[in-house]
Length: 168
Image 1 (spheres, rainbow, N blue to C red):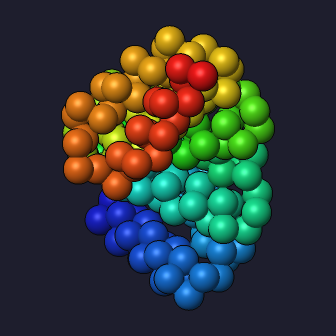
Image 2 (image 1 turned 180 degrees about the vertical axis):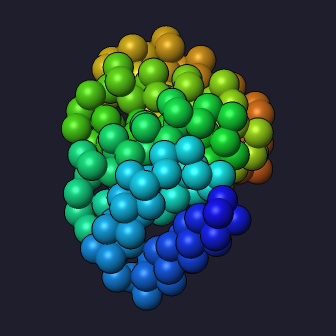
């Protein structure tokens, strides 16, 4: 019976959320993987993948987390979670000093992000990655855009400082 199957999957997802809330991330990973294996097209598969990626991140499995965030963003590009996933992928690449990949992930996120704070974070990460590549004119342009679009943003001071550094 399809209704019974959906109820079981919903219960599994709820259980994964409970374990995530209790910070029992290994259990979250197991349940999320089992659910996605059983029903890859589950109606809340994007949310399950997000919980999976977050649990990987919380257990120090950065590569698995980045892969899971990228998987969500590419398989569910219209999900409300996709732009944030691209930011997390970008952060992974930036930490690994893979700045071109970080910038590409930011561009993917910026193409879909509507949330103001998320857009600001994506722009700042992109500008910081460009700066780290010594692409100072590009970094300056990105940071100027960030500052003009978010004049009262949380990252205003950081962006202004990094923008000034582009000219030294």
